[in-house]
Image 1 (cartoon, rainbow, N blue to C red):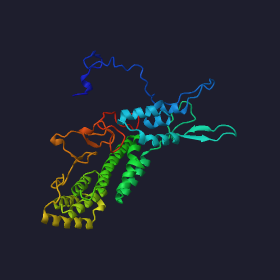
Image 2: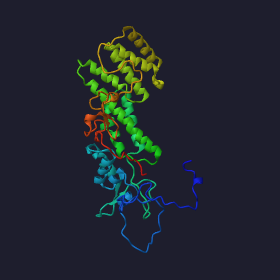
Image 3: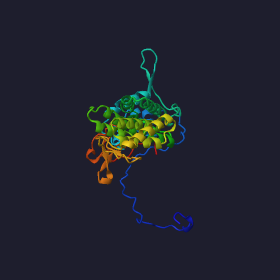
Image 4: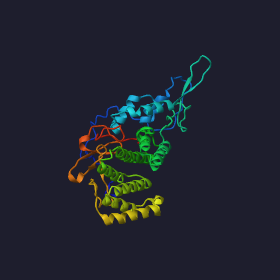
Length: 370
């Protein structure tokens, strides 16, 4: 079997040559890698040497984006983001750069007429007073911090403040953009941050659908009903998904789109929405479904299959229309937030995260050293 050590002779050395491919001439040169963490070495106190600045010590073993920013190497931080997420619009990140840089520094008042003493702000585990010991800048955008902002956006969404919710997710709190500045202490936090990006992306897309629907002129009824139907296909929390179904069911029923309203009612009755799915909500959906089945027509034609009780639509985040790969329609994605677009928008700025180039090939976001 593959990997069975019993098949190999312990005293036999086999020269495989280049049969498995040569690892020579890779052009690695004298590439400097971060030193592996090790215990502090004894220091000869009889020799006086210039001390190493804390910014250089930050970058000795770790060169994540927040570390580069804290050390003042903004150019390298931007270059790293370009390689990692395809960054082409750095303007939204400027406040984050300033916050991270200032949050890792403090000043201690000195004697009269003497300048203040600059000190770094580091993590509790850092051994600041030990020469040569590893230190890390204090993290500003932690999992706990971002989770708090995420919950605030969820609360506003529940209250129906869709405009405010979009503001929380993309502008004021900018959780989606702030995740580019986050660091993870372990694989669990890394998985949480990756999930945060997906959650924020879905909510921003959903809020954009709803805010655009509300801005439509009153005579564009078909398009309004279409956007409300698309909103029900966004991957939101169960309680918020229930709200989208109720809203779309009501809007379509009032507009005499009974087939589409029946679809929403069925999905509401069949879905698992936890405590949000009260008997009153179910009874209302059952009554609407009964009336819709009696009338069985749609007064307005929209691009939505009313027979599909589990729609998994791919919505273009720019045109807010359906992309059909099964019909040969090509699509591209944002390399950071994974928003979908029609192929014609490759190379332009993502409308969801407002950071990355649509369709660019990148290394991927990194939250902790490998």
